[in-house]
Image 1 (spheres, one colour):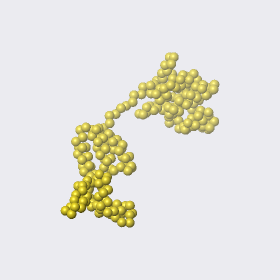
Image 2 (cartoon, rainbow, N blue to C red):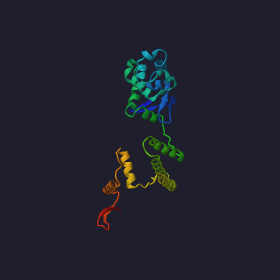
Image 3 (cartoon, rainbow, N blue to C red):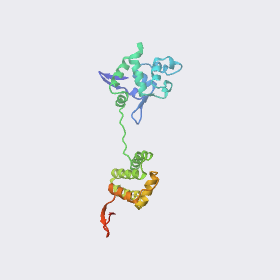
Image 4 (cartoon, rainbow, N blue to C red):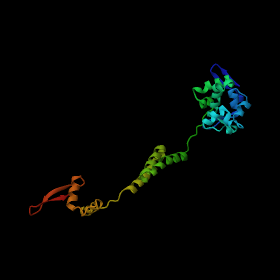
Length: 244
């Protein structure tokens, strides 16, 4: 049933037929397949998973401790549960330990049960080329989480358009035109404010008793570099600051 030459273990066709390999590379096997792999009779292994043996069977207890429900194994034994079964019949079953279980356990111990079974069952992962629709959906999904943050939607949409242009170069022109429309929408409307009006607004924000004078506002704007000024003299020889 299990063909081996030194460390080269190969499953025979009758055991391979008991396995089902899934698209993600995981696999399940029948109770009969697990029994054949462990080198025990099907009826011996089946008794661990039926009737009142759930609490009394040492093997069942090991499986339950790992989160498995042995009563469900008639629908298939997952690969991790299979490794526990093989470990049990390699070291923990006492007089019922088998040399075959020990050989199989040693064969997959270094690479893991999944990798070893994939080799034995000639698993070839299928690769599918993403469609434009699925790629756009993935891009949209990546950026969707940003809407929950305190980020302007226009900025998120602009970044999304950049990603689309890089993924699909032939859409670069359309993406750039769309970004220009977004940019125009994001422009802040300029509202002219006189120093007097600005002094009133700032005073209200700071909860001051009276507005800040226009002269003081002009001085502040000059100091922070938002406004230029120069001193000029009038006909009477008095000087004043003139905004530039």
